[in-house]
Length: 434
Image (cartoon, rainbow, N blue to C red; front, side):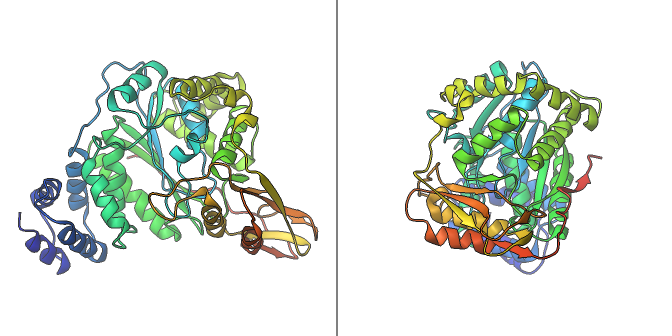
């Protein structure tokens, strides 16, 4: 494969055949195409795009670049959820055990924090002892025995995607819809699931801030999913303000356990049960989304979902006592209130600034090799639509060291006005499977 031909063709606005895309991906995987040439092609794709057939070919090439897990002896149908990332988005933690408790099998392949957004694996690893680095055999066994496994991408699953993603991260080509689609789908379907519900975030704290781009990403995910022979449905959901109250790894685990106990913030409950309904309906476990939501609520009410979470935590080496008593989770030594400078109504809470503040506290990564402090974060006491008095706490910063800069940043994330404002809908759009 002559990479120069592929680069020139895409640079000039041309279209690749599926065979050319496959040949380029295979040559890169074998080391015959160096990073600098692949980086040039990625930039050409970023500027010129890929059509559906090209995107499907790239997805298929990355999907089959390593092991593709096959499940033949599961007690229920497979289904997973993918979120494009946000601040305070801990939904996978309560959602997966709820769906598993209702009879579906969830081979959940998750990621780590990226930029200002948190990662499911980082949150889970704040539970003492819990392992998310599962080999393929262990991952399969866990899904078979417990109906759920929380794992991450390994060198065996879509390895070409792993190399391309690292290259995109340092070449300014992350925010490209065809490349996002092929990366997400190659990992998800390599993990053995047949169905995925996509939660595409939009708003200030999302990677796709504009609703139009979020819709385009959701539609592209579904188009390629169906073309590859899998099933999917997508929701476009709000990420203008953080989801729930807690943002920060251990803090979000506590909030997730609250949801599994039937409590927790209303928006986290709403989205968790809605996504559970979608997953159970897509998997055929429930006759409709409404019936799936009802089944999910019942699994929480009778304790099955919490027991499933405890069971999976223990199976992955975590301390199950932390599920029963979240005080066992690691805690930051300093907790500082952020007081409002004026009275009025909260009209906005900037999710992006909150996420960046948590990264600077140590709760995220500035570099790939950085360690993450599981204890730090921000708990929102007031959100959009709430009334606040002068001097009343808006939020609490959980920090390990001096946090004056974080307190200022959180305060600047709030916008307060005299008149009240109602928050927008949490689910902005549903794009069904066809």
